[in-house]
Image (cartoon, rainbow, N blue to C red):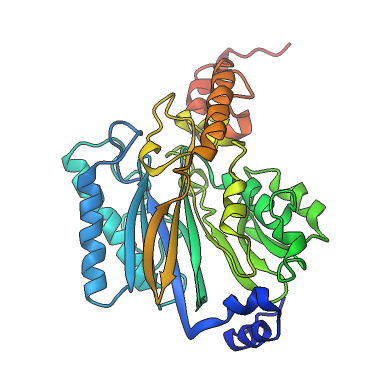
Length: 392
């Protein structure tokens, strides 16, 4: 699909009905929203995050903001993962921004080592920065857009799961009218959305247009360990609407180094799915890969910020949602979107599913299939038995 310029998009918005009036751009300056995460050390074990590391990250980004490197920032954590949320005007994959994130992670790693935190720097798989953090361990979700008159975004952060965890929610938000009413009653959305899908094993991508290619999309993204939605755009004008991190640590390192613990950005309202429609996709605690030693299936539990401390069998997997209004590049927020009793039933169901799955112990489907265990320590265990197998 041909890329449209911001001017083209703005002209298109002016020609549309009242639902698109708020989509008219507040100014013509591009804003980049970057969310870059890494596990730089857990407290205690893999369950939570030490305040000293948050302070270190805030200091690094505050210095960068004072120098004009970034417009604004917010530092968060989900479980034992550190998330750097930054706005700037330098575009995606910018060396300066990625180097800032890398240097922040390495500084936090040094603090983690001093405190003897668990797995200090485990997501930093390279010794030196090479121009972008992609392929170096950290997870990245970035999008560039022209800020609307009102720009609500939700940033999702997960712990103890893999990058494929976003596939089902993204389909429900942008492809399922039973979840998102706007797909059938909002004239700005009824043409549908385009899903960019990455084959993480082959390093190839495909864009599928929905609703007409919905079945092709589902045929791929149902295999969450291999095909992952990396971004979603509105079909009628190619406006970016969602971006997800798709880095798989095991494929980078060639061995088990922890789960990917992905991040995702979703823009909301004014010709895009409403905030409530986006959050509704997480009302079902679907099964994801990860949990203990990155080797099990478990329910993804939506929790408030303060409950993102997975402890039962290092889980179950958690997801938090930080809502922001972006105002001239400033991050107004965050609002804790899952701190809501309407998700209590989802959390109860997730606990029941976790109990059911745990009763399987080392048996599938709780434990991942062998092809997904090849990057764990299991091959070393099986290697001790290989000479004892006899042909029958």
